[in-house]
Image (cartoon, helix red, strand yellow):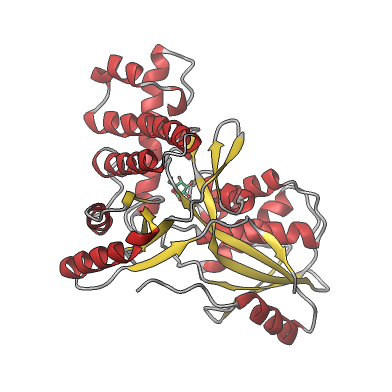
Length: 391
Ligand code: GLA
């Protein structure tokens, strides 16, 4: 079943906050993200094309006297407290995304006071819509407002990424936090992950929809295999840099360079690097398609992206491939591909509005036949990035 729009949580959270902490909260909305094309390119200093979406985490925060921080996850009905003087990791996983942000702010020399933070939301966890980035960037944004820290938006993005890299221990790139903070309604953002230059492209046509199909497979393998892929990309750069010291990341590599030195690459390594170089090119081409208003061509690039992720980068899985195959049989589906790190989570589909019902029917039937259960579908609308809400 297509998931209806999320419930109106922020006001409920604000009311709970008043009840729990007897104070007026600052309310912040921190969205999930989609990525239209440009997968596993961000940590190769390449190009991505993400957007912030309607699914979000909502924070209610407020200062407290003293140096203690009280965190409460409303959906999990769990709490965690820690002292600003000793932000240590917790055994429960969720607090670490938040403690990591506090840790980074303190390391950067910011003066924080104690605070209370209550959050909840409707970003499906482990679906590849970046609920972790929404936690990190959302709290960094909220604390920046509450304690008047003077961080600019890009500083918030970088700080949130560092929290994930250093405290949570996942070597993710910058895309998720960037989309979370810089999202704009009805737009995708082309980000150059080296220079951090970015450009918005309108991404809306009344007759098109962005539909996510969730395998509900949690991405268990994702973080270990993610780090393996990063290592393979670095190994590829080392080989190319011996011949051309100008190659600092796969962003600088070309298909010609790869072909010229193919003999030095183990076959698997070659395929990984070849994928990244081609995917960067696809993002550029997809942006040209957008400029030309050619969504059909854009969709074909999405398909190319998935094929590369499945065959060469090898981060897909049976459930994702099946959803993509079932989607592509439906007339009016312009493009279908896996999204995010891989090994589970969602596919992203660009679909004519009139074909959404047929898409749902096709993927649900194929998925049920193959796996004996149903995927979840969400129609995503592209929204603004993290923002303060009226409480
Ligand atoms: C995860 C990471 C991102 C990016 C994608 C793959 O979502 O957090 O930085 O690398 O995988 O494109």
